[in-house]
Length: 218
Image (tube, rainbow, N blue to C red; front, side, top):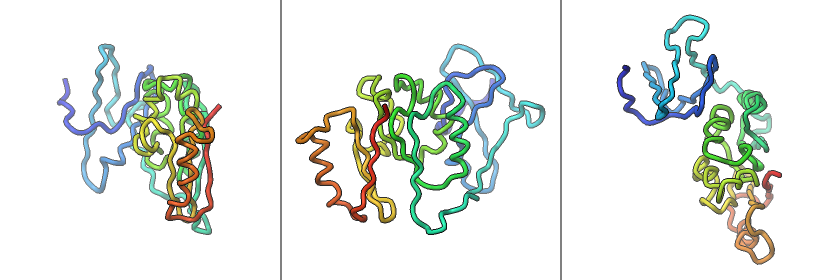
């Protein structure tokens, strides 16, 4: 039996299969030169074995991203959009790998996980792929996220980056842009709280009045 894991949790990979690779972003832990230790733990009564030796076909790997992506020539902010993001297939892994080489702020247009926006889907499918870009992601919810009551796992997973919890609409400034993210899964007709907020929001922005909107998924 190994030593107890004492430090904060860096990530969760959800359910695992045999002979598979799973990724955990350790950027927040590795802050400079030195020796670092990582542990794995599980609350499941089922068993899983992990290779820990530094040699062999299944040896663990430390993948280092050095920030060599080419910035926009103009220096303008970059928004990278995605919708219908993660499920049990391979498309989310491929697009997340593509995003590794693209700088900028990521925004989602809803349906972040399929099919029902559950916590398990976020853990098993979004976190191992697009999850490594969560720190620079500004999401919006879709109808599939709301298949779980109140889209609670969506708000829990993205936290403050999704705006006030349970509301799903918010705004932020990015360079000279003022970005507005809306929520089509709640009341949005004239007179609704969301509509009144939208009317008032651009005038309160410290950025330019040019506005981009992102809606929910289908």
